[in-house]
Amino acid sequence: MDPPNERLYKSNMNALSPVDRIPIYNLYGEQDELPDVLHCETIEARAVRHDWRISAHRHAHMHQFLLVRSGGGMARLDNRQIALAPLTVINVPCRAIHGFDFEPHTGGWVVTVPMGMLEPSSRAFSAVTGVLARPGHATGTPMLASFFETIAAEHAGLAFGRASALRAAAHLLATQIARLLLDGDEEAASVGGASVLRRFEALIEQNFRARWRVADYAAALGMSATHLTRLTNAEAGMSASALIEARIMREARRELAYTTLSIAQIAYDLGYEDPAYFSRVFSRATGLTPSQYRSRSNGEIALPQPT
Image (tube, rainbow, N blue to C red):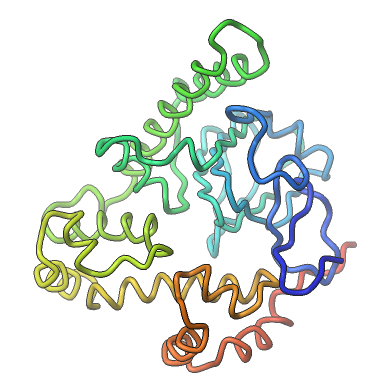
């Protein structure tokens, strides 16, 4: 059992005890970073060891892309249930809760990338990472499936320039999947205020822990804070500051429900210098103190006894 007030770290996809909440997994034991440029394995290589069921978990420092080649099943992605079919693509940002119930003999690939590799290296790639900051799914193409297969072959080999090839492949894969996610997002395809709102939400995903102010987001979007708030009120019915706070509070609820971090640790993790102030903000937003919310969630999210 992990000591109190620490994150739950276990080797990747081990069985959960009945009293564990959603844990944070690493692929390689207690290491926070991948020992390779990226990791690529088949769905069946991992899932067959667990009777084709991967319990709900999340990763603190890694981003995953999954493509189903054959078979199917169901995926849990945060609070959504997603039917899996051939060519389904799943985008799993770090900290997103995810789990899978695969049909036996489902085929496909999982590519795991350290978060550092997806940090914006240019304004153009920042747009890609902004799209990928939210969990999502899309229907892929045979060409994308072939590219997953190419990455798998490169990862398994020892050819000259392997590391450079894998880094380039990770960026190309991220871009291709971001395109698919945008193609399936009616809001992102729209123009005017809805388009700005989509970009604003993507920036929030990237920067809410850094406690960016409305003015910081507005500057990144090339407008004034007043104009940004006018747009968010029109498109979302909420001020820009309220949207930022809502995202922070959603993460606070996740941390309280799914980790054993102390309330003070959660406050600091979310950029609050004063845990007492964080508690007041949380109480105002939810009607419960952080302790009350954690106590109420305790029985609701315990995983069932294995049968």
